[in-house]
Length: 96
Image (spheres, rainbow, N blue to C red):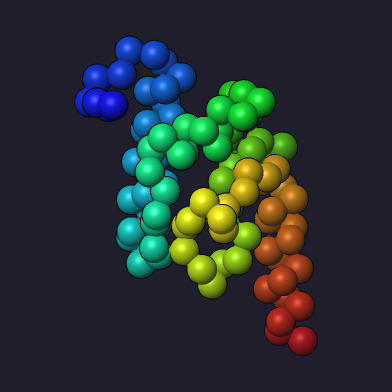
């Protein structure tokens, strides 16, 4: 599929999000092994892409194991607030 010009607004927004996520992982030196079709499939289940955002009740893609890269078997879509709470507990739990 050619992604240069995407007419569908939802697919266009997903493409922009995909590129941002992939480039952010590259910037951080993390392995990114998810292609655009898989990314669309992840977000299209139950119209998750409509609930995507930065609020605590919004959904976002996160890694299950942060020591591993961005692979289909290592990502999940969760509520942002739940994920941040879990990460804080992990981080401060290790400091004790």
